Image (cartoon, rainbow, N blue to C red; front, side, top):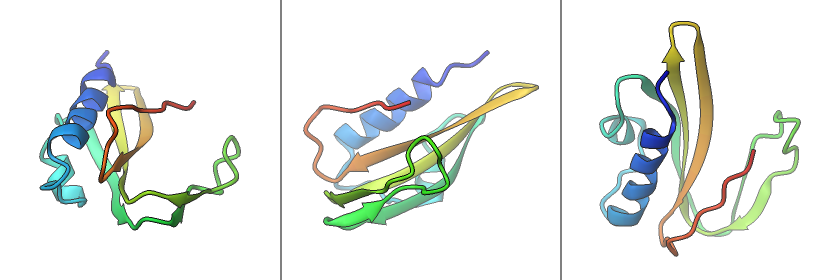
Length: 102
């Protein structure tokens, strides 16, 4: 079973080292990930924006007044019969900290 850790670490490292040059697009982010990971959403969000997925019953309220960031959703195939999806917000100005929820 392949772990999400290398994929998540790749994206976090990207947020840290390539903030200024990262294109917040599906092709740009996909090119940095292994073949078992598929970017299903990537979009730049402006400072002060609201973002979330109200269909997610665990987090029905959108976050508001956010800093500028790149919102990314990735699906990872972990075996022939299993996959998982995670989202990541990569801020334009990162303070070297992260928050995991779930």
